[in-house]
Length: 352
Image (cartoon, rainbow, N blue to C red; front, side, top):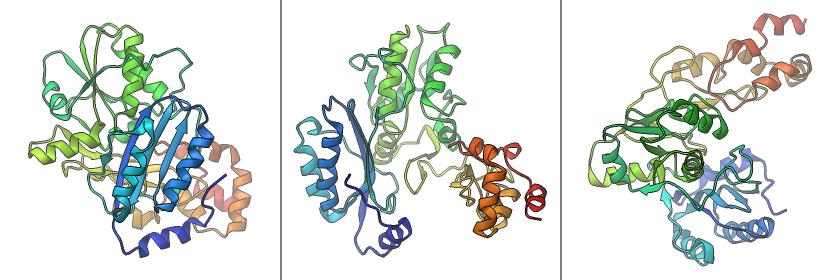
């Protein structure tokens, strides 16, 4: 398979040395792809020649892409993209705050679905989705009486930023959150529901699933938080989205209104910077302030900090000793779980 196998450290160094600007953008579209692998390989050839980076998922149901494109090749990239019949004029959403360092290589993967929903076939019909609202329509509809605003993102995303008065499901997966919405509002299916997510792709499935389950009045923010942030900035109006928009690239977030609404998971001080635990045997996603980052060397706990500083041979021994606990902790989830980690004393005892 066509792919870049150069060590990521080298790729990141190359990215930092680039002397040209990049633009971060995203797009998606649901459409039938008969041969996803062939489609994937064609895209890889086209985009690698243009110096594009990114994380792209291709499936029989369509494409979901987050990308970094050299600015000097942006026009050629767009023309190239729109030359694909099914993607002609597909809306492109550009990053709110962009330093061009969002991705360091091109990764295109073939997946069963472009959004992992955990739902059985036939539980929704993408030909029947909620009403698409522009950024301004959504902005105005939020305050309408009896309206219910629902965040269709995972909890670690809504924790650092969300819309005014939004219901933010305490869930880690699409399947969990959509079920929480149905259970929470099963007696209010006649109310007006406004759904939103990062770029709009999850709301397509969510609105379809809600309609399939008897919800009568479902709308969704077209283009997601990314488009909303761009439009209110152009119009100079106060944002009803508070905090930072989580993004799935090296940045892990971009501020919409400048507010910090989350807190460091270690000391509780205001913070909204996600990081992965520096102990790669944990790699937990969590929020950490600069002071705690320095204190714990980028780790989520004293236990992980202890492991982080051990020689690799000792770390291998610990992987075997605490295999079950490490396996349980490897969840993309922004909550500290000290009970799943060995204590510094256990680590010390094991090394004696």
